[in-house]
Image 1 (cartoon, rainbow, N blue to C red):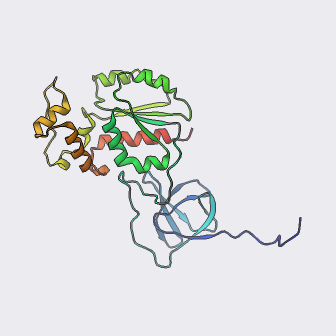
Image 2 (tube, one colour):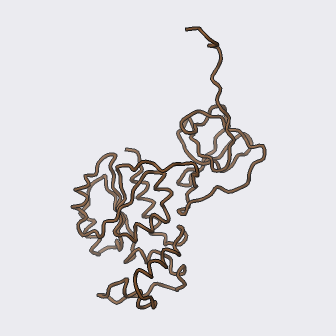
Image 3 (cartoon, rainbow, N blue to C red):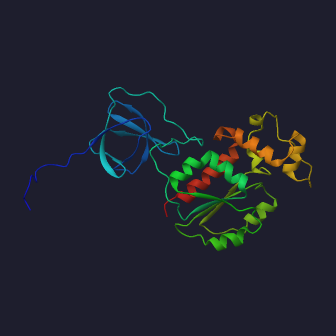
Length: 261
């Protein structure tokens, strides 16, 4: 048992506290990216924008699950952490996770494409898949077939979720505690893109009974909805290009389906 140098202590590696480095505080479990090192303390910021200050103590942090000692850079780099399109701190070294059982459903392929364009980096880190439903008329039956449960949560993003709408009546039938339905007030996800990004003052008002997308195209002089969609997607690159209700709805869904069981 005493063979070898048994008195030798295991050496904890030292790692430079570079901006953007993601570590976990070993005591509290708080996980975040390095945003500032001042004196003998480091500030970490998690994906929700919460910041906490921790002392630079030996073996006080975990990097990829292993203890490390953070040290100040010899020449601190005053470069802000890179942000994803959703505004979260980018984690360049993070690999896409294997898809979890939990899912986020959206109404159609346009919704899925817009969510992917803005929140795709976050979703890959979390291992969350977004799937289009192609409408929510059969939402209760689809949820029953999915069989949500603990560790198998379901988030649903619904267009035009306002009091008295058809969508609100369908959603009212969803009662599972493992399902969260959020939505935005816009007729279509197109309308959740800020109109000024498209060079217009406001989205056209389409008369009741007329197909909304076709009515928008006619009012704006665009030949086909597919042409209009390509334009919209090219102008909606980050969270700053879409309306606040959509941002809030998607962020709530991501938090819900990634919450530990």
